[in-house]
Length: 174
View 1 (spheres, rainbow, N blue to C red):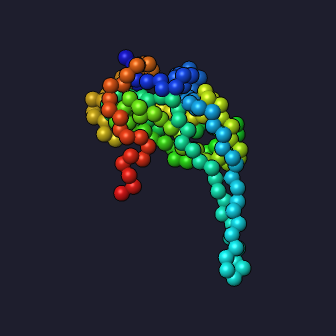
View 2: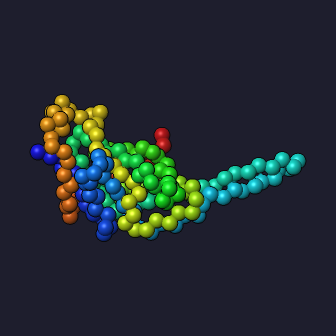
View 3: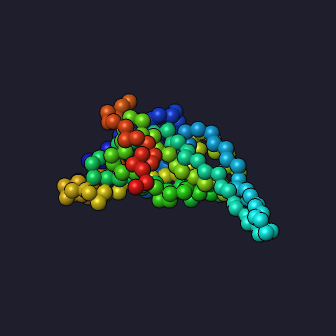
């Protein structure tokens, strides 16, 4: 029996597909993205002292999906090994962690990136990947079920049936 990941596709061509060639599942950009490369700003203070600051463009790239995991699991996602080479991006919160309760109707996944050069990503490009792991709150029975499962299965749904959690950073800083 396989563990079921329910996926609501919010943007066409963003359905994750389980590859037989690897252990990770690729995710795609839900929109075209252009970011300028880093640039330096020079400042001269009174007295002639100068300083320079480098500014990096950042963006939360939408991934066009909302997902629901079985209880007791969480998602871990990373940029793909070729993301910096092909797109000049680094994942800012690498690794990214999305816990099981982030599964509302409009709780769209995003990949926070920083541009290391000029960035041009097309809608549908594979930019990051994820896998599932047992949560530290997983019960004995959830762990046992995972141990005896035969992997995972993606099930496309029209509705996740869960309330929205509030988006990125909704719980605040303190």
